[in-house]
Image 1 (cartoon, rainbow, N blue to C red):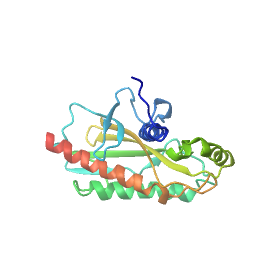
Image 2 (tube, rainbow, N blue to C red):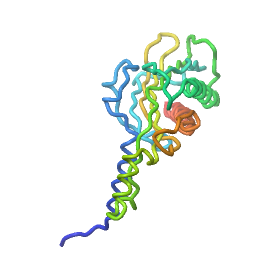
Image 3 (cartoon, rainbow, N blue to C red):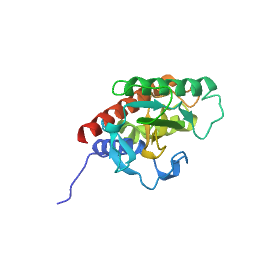
Image 4 (tube, helix red, strand yellow):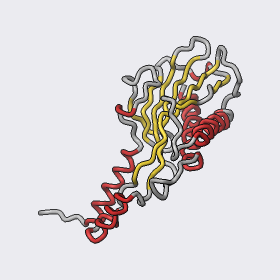
Amino acid sequence: MRKHFSLPLLAATTLALAACSNNKVTPEAYSGFLKDYSVLTEHQSPSGQTVLSWVSPTLKVQRYTQVYIEPSQFYPQPLPTERIPQTTLSDTTWYYDAVLKHELGKVLPVVTTPGPNTLIVRPAITGVTASTQSLRYYEWLPITLVAAGVSTATGIRDQDSEIATEVLFLDGGTKAVVAEVVRKGTGVPLENDQQVITTANVKSVLDGWASDLRNSYVAMRKKQ
């Protein structure tokens, strides 16, 4: 018996799958910041997001009594543009540092210099971009497809603000890499392709990354 599916249901399913895949970092997007991407495998973060990560099988988190968070950086270093000005670049790294210290400070003392028994966190922001939003399910209906196409072509369609990160974790004593994480997220939508991207557009993503990092650390500590 032939099965029939409604167009809205098909479109909604397609968009749900697209939304999940949009936050997966593909190899073409690797920045070169990490030492070895071949060890990364796909996992689910505590908040349910897809991340690529690796943890050394010899890592013992109990040995770390403090954490040192290196100042975050953009990698590669971008040039400011009209859409992403220097204020956005500076404010974003400042906020990333602040929220990492806030979250990790809940489980480990944050120190200003690394040393033995210190977990070093080396974060990088590897991309801040905007992409035109996918069609919403009701825009897949034939009567609205033409209007949606016009919006995209003229630049008035809503856009998603996106940000990506790669993070290295090192042993403070040996400087050996003990873990790696690659992920990206979607922030507050932009009204069009002219709107300036600010740190406010991606703050929620940075908050989520820092919270996931703290919760991942706590979960690992409980298991060991």
